[in-house]
Length: 106
Image 1 (cartoon, helix red, strand yellow):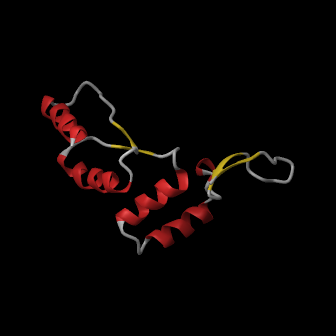
Image 2: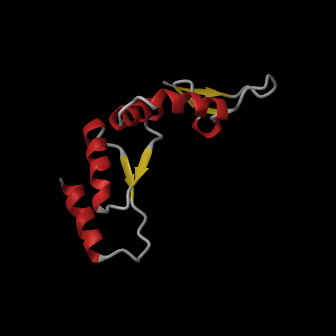
């Protein structure tokens, strides 16, 4: 649920809130509370929470190295439409580009 908050005189933060969260304005207390909440959660549960809470303003980045495969698999099981960023620095091995294309086609 996305809502627009624009109250400024009453001390409220301005910006777009997703399910009660303004991702640009999480306070240290909110971060600590979420950290404690996620301590006992699986990676899949945490990813699902992020997607449910911030969709469609959520994405992930990947280096498309072999250690990225488990996380990419988890994301694909939760929401195949999640945007995956790959920053092509021009310094990647050709094998990385080929591997990225193979994963994207699966």
